[in-house]
Length: 147
Image (cartoon, rainbow, N blue to C red; front, side, top):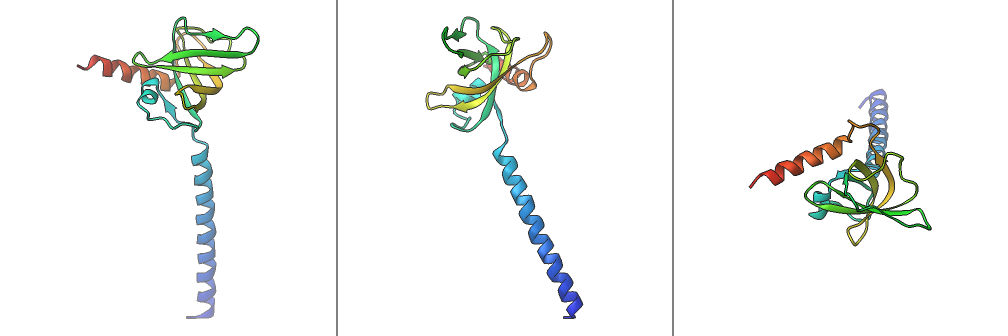
């Protein structure tokens, strides 16, 4: 093989190896930071992983909000009208958080099946509902309508 051609092949090979390594590292980093949404029904069925950051949401169940008077601890339940999920959160809830409204919480499931939330997001106006919650509620209603 001609020396110039051999040098080009080695250069192309090195570039391909470095490019493959960079793409692999980016894909690994992205896979570690993905927070998938799970509905209370999916969590009840065991589809959601434990001790991995996920997002879950639904409608806050009326009468389920339990606030600790001496701390910022709050516990409440959300539903997709088939199953309920208990969420525990330490911090200040959004101003728009209230019973009967749609929320999305980000956190990790513990061994009890309770979502320990690190963040709670509430809707920002009367018509808006997070797309994941809307889709989960629609699927839940369709599943309950089927015999």
